[in-house]
Length: 198
Image (cartoon, rainbow, N blue to C red):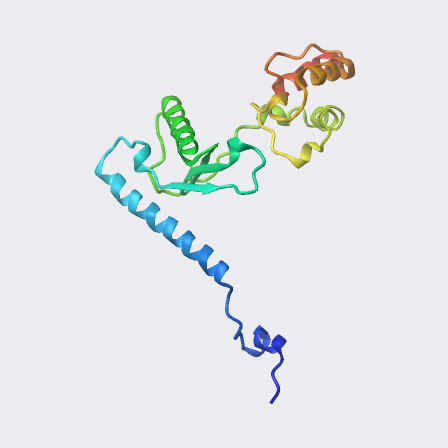
């Protein structure tokens, strides 16, 4: 009987004798450890009603390919993807994450329980959806990308894109003959464009 390498990892014949790579196993092990820590923090959270930064399961990592020093390290909470912070050091990334949590707590009545899986929540798009045809044209002419290639909410701003502010305002004035508001919120600009067309 002759066995070829293709036969060893061929699920059709029931054989799979090729071991999984060690890097894959290490990644899986790290993921399991994160979830065990999250479960531990979750169980501990029932001992009190007011949770602080230290009560949340923390993840810290290094971005070895980062070209910007302020993005060299990252930090977030396991199972709560709302917050991701960066810094030039682990200490700064953690401090920035702590500030984000404090800001969130001051603006929200309820905060998720430590370790609990929290679904991603997208901001409202009710206003922006009213101006879809204007948005498509605007993104093509001003931003230089397809409107459908990114998520834009009612609170998204032109300032979130890596564009020269004064140059962009001048383009908006020239193309649409409007004076955009200072904060450059897309929904407000699109409303101005629609009103200028009437």
